Each structure stands twice: as structure tokens, then as C-alpha cells.
Amino acid sequence: MTWKKAAIFLFVLSLLFLAACGDSDDSSGDDNSSDGDTYVPDSLTVQFVPSQNAETLEARAKPLEDLLENELDIDVTVSVSTNYNTVVESLASEQIDVGFLPPNAYVQAHDEYEAADVLLQSQRYGVNEDGSNTDELVDSYYAMFITRSDSDIESIADLEGTTIAFQDITSSAGYVWPAAALLDEGIDPLSDVNPLVLQGHDAAVTAVLNGEADAAAIFQDARNVVVNDFPDVFEDTKVVAYTEPIPNDTISVQTNMDEEWKEKIQQAFINVGESEEGREIVRDIYTHEGYVESEDSNFDIVREYSERIQEQ
Image (cartoon, rainbow, N blue to C red; front, side):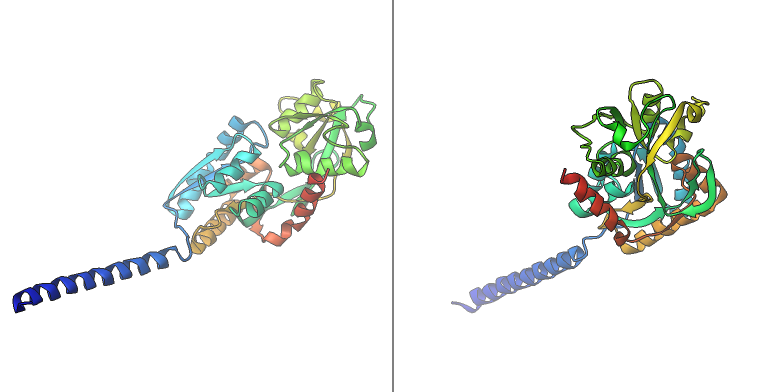
């Protein structure tokens, strides 16, 4: 080999060596960037479950966009899912960043899809028998069965063979807790009653009023949602029974969101709930009175109830 050929050979060899080093550095950089697999949102999508008429709920929730944008300094889009499962699936497919999830929907998103981390739980005022609020903020609520006032149904045992208006099977107050109460009485909620699955607790109350259902499983006291359309709803219906307490709803986020941003979003919702304007909005949406920090262990009772229902 001549010195000229040797020089060319060494030059090519050095280029290959540098290229290999460059590939190695790039590969290392890729590994570091994917270690945490987190993302920083440049905009925020927030979705609610349709606990009442979806169009009405979305109109009530839209003003949250401006308040959250002021808190976070990024664009915020608020929407309402078509049903309870959709918001869970949207989190799992990374189509939304934040979900207002009822307890059972949160557990499904967290445990089954590994797609949600709880940030906050809502606070509500307790509710009296007549539907009025107590003066105490609570971190749980009840589901209840209602029927028409002139109905012969006086207890859960009397519900066997009747038509009951339920919500989606992931609705804590609209199905899971009421179904467990039926099971406690030896009544299968799928075969020993005629389940009528509706979207929105307002629709369930209306179904009882118009005779479409003999009873309805609703959150306490969802009759307030329809009182403007049915002023006599409290006289025309009666409470048959209450369930055991249910943990309040969550505000949950994508598990792979940047931790700093999780904290920012958490504080933003706390601030919104503490402001006069913000509290009025969240009260109008879900009767929330603000938000407090939460943790996953608060929902172990939800897991117990879910297992009971799945075993039926």
C-alpha cells in the first residue's frame, strides 16, 4: 500500500469512527429523553363526565377555560364526554390531559389503563332530607333511590321486579353503590330488576316523574338539577333509601405529565375553587364548593365496591 492510499484509508477510518461516536451520543441522548417519558403541555384539554344533559353541562363548564388560562398561561379547552367510559378512554389514548372523574371511573383509568393520577377531590355541602344544603363541607356523598310519592315501593326489598333508571356501570352513584345495596338485599341489579340505562341523573329523575321508570338511582340530591323544570319534584317523589358514603369526585391527570405541571394544575384548580367567580361556576356544574388535595389510597373503598359488583 502506498503512503497515499494509506492516508486515504486512515482518513476514511477516522470518519467512520467519528460517525460511530456521533451515533452513540445521539442514542444516549434519546435514552435520556425517554427515561421519564413525561410531557409538558403547551395547551390543556379538560373533560367532564355527563352527569346531566351534556349540552347544558358544557355551557356551564365553558367559563372555566378563561379562569384556567389566566392561572396557567396556556390555552385551555373544556368539553363534556359522550358517556362515562369515553373520558376514561380519552385519558388512556392521551386525547385529553385532565378528567373530572367520578370515583369508579378514576379507579378504572388508574388501575386498568394506568392512565390517570388523582390530584384533587371535590368538596360539597351535605344535603338534608328536603334537598337543602347543610352548613358542613364534606368529602363524601350518598347515592339514593327515589320513586314517585304515590308508589307502593317503601324499601330496597320492594324494588325487585321493578324498572330502575341507572347510569353507566362506571357511575359510582348512578350504578355501583346502588347495585351493591340491591345485592345486600339479595336482588341482582341486572336480572332481578329491569335496568333502564340513561345519560344524566336529571334524565333518571325525569324518568320517574313521567312514569318511564318505577325508581331511579341518583346522587343525593339530584332532584335539585330538575327543580326549575319540575318545581314540585320534591313533593312528587320520595326517597326510598340511601347507600353507604361515596368518596367525592376527582380531578385527575395523565400519569406521564410533567410533575411540575401536575402541581401547577393542582394549584390552579384550588385557586379557581377559592375565587368567587370560580366557585360559582363549579357549583353550577357539579355542586362542587372547591377542591382539596387527594391521594390514590382514598379510593380503596371504591376498589372493594367494584370487586363486589364484578363478582355478581
